[in-house]
Image 1 (cartoon, rainbow over the protein chains, first blue to last red):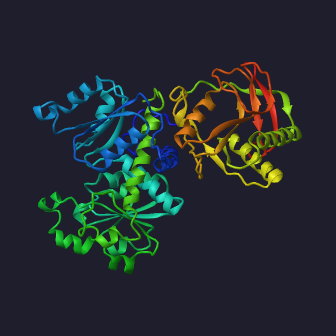
Image 2 (tube, rainbow over the protein chains, first blue to last red; image 1 turned 180 degrees about the horizontal axis):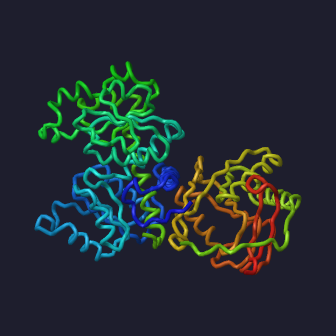
Image 3 (cartoon, each protein chain N blue to C red; image 1 turned 90 degrees about the horizontal axis):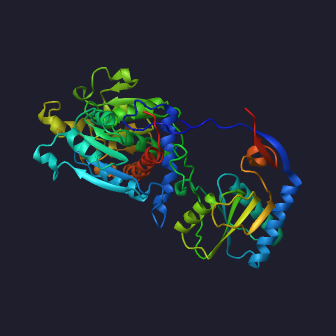
Length: 311
Length: 187
């Protein structure tokens, strides 16, 4: 199996063998993080641009580290402190950056489809690092790598994704990736935060945390985005945390003893996740972050390490 | 997409099972002789068949000398000078679970041809630490070097033409032990 795509835009467009290839490549590259000299020459002379229109800690930093460990030159562009504040449009900024001949542009934007738009406009490879509430494929890949390392396989696994499903690009990418690998997915949250017709993605729906976490192998919590409260989607943070916050008590009563707790970050401690759970023995949250670098190395290597002419 | 891969057919058998085994036995003795014993030696095999050959050499040295030498696995994909010319890379991972610092590393591969793989392997090893020395053990040296690289231990020197291909078949991967020269099938 060889990689033939020019871009990584969504999990939805990938087939199972492509997802497994990405996860395998990332798994092989993890070893570089344990070296004394964390650098290999694979992408020497390649230029990678981080084009971020939304704040990000983990994703931007891990793409930057991934590029640097592969010896590429990585340039960070963030919307604040750039010509964007002078009124330059997204597409104009992107075209100007493309004029400097980068090999890969990694883009995060608040609008769904931003990465797809760049892929149609620019000559270089595009990686979607999050577009609105649409997709965030590298997060799904690192979640899959984390799960496979802990559970050894995907067959017959059951994952509960809990929280604000409606506004979560992570949930959407995770659902596509997991379903293709044969993982059963239950989404759970207050009805206002579960999108209509979500069953069409092949998932089960639950409106009670206690039911959703029973007998699952993995509980993936999503960040509650505070701005949802002012939009009237939840009555109060306190109520949300009482019904949907995962505590040690609920975990002990309802979940399996070998369950994994995952969270894409940033964590709202005490809201969706009690601190004792976030830092507890079930949690693999920091492991997810470490895997993020390996996954992004794998993506950059497959995209920039080949001169694929494929669309 | 990739260019069509030419099909090869077997032309001559060069080594049978017994001859392959004898060549490895001789190389194991030469390694011990050249290094005055087995102390501070370590094997690093190049994926995939170099690793198998390294394991066999380590087993032979254990028989002769009693020493258990570590065997590591090296994937040189990230160090290739033709990365990007051959389609997307396939990474299978490096696994060297011991320190190579101040060790004499015996690098093992099945066939030595242009020398470019060995060049990449030398860079990859040195990125993992500073060995005291690196030596090169090769089952088949088929000539046509493009870089100034020379093996320390050779199973068999085999003059070939560039259009031919040398296939080292090993029990663990291919079901039998032998070395054959292959030539492209006429279209």
